[in-house]
Length: 141
Image 1 (cartoon, rainbow, N blue to C red):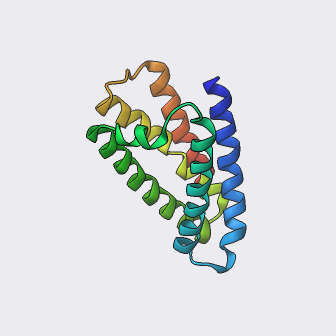
Image 2 (image 1 turned 90 degrees about the vertical axis):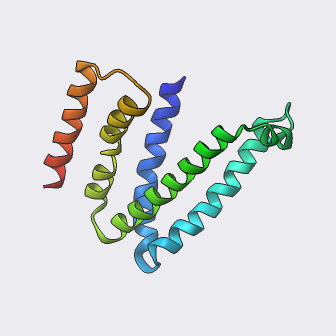
């Protein structure tokens, strides 16, 4: 099932790049990010309320431990910075290059997951990361 969700995510990420490139034609990219974030916030809470029918959302939030909360906050900061830089790149550059460079996050994720999460760096993963890096260079140079 995770493969379906990952594929849907990639399709919507591609749509995001195209739609925001069109939408950034006459607006500051940071303002566009802020507006987009409000929409995401509303959508996220609708989904939370829809999918948590059997549990109290307030109680669940109250029971989040401090370590989890810290990492959620740090993730939110990283996401916000990612969006700000990505939208600026889309505004001033070509979508087909900015989006590809953005996907170098896959290579960085592999490296960081190896360091911080102790995930295995198998030969297959390393070769895949090298191909992603090579593909990025071919497309963007």
